[in-house]
Length: 87
Image: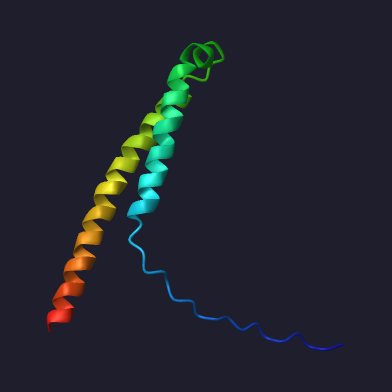
């Protein structure tokens, strides 16, 4: 019986992204879901699923917070890059 070869892992560098676009898309999808749930509000309420609306509201609000965080982060990264390029 042969001994298994030890696994070797490659180190992958993280992508150079600031996640603003990702948060924008996610927030937009939650906003679309909110509009859809509001259109079907009566049906959702009759089926006991009115909490879906509040889930979408929470998704939009958290997305807006995420947008603030990632936008600030983008500005700090840009400021750090410009400072390091001046040096």
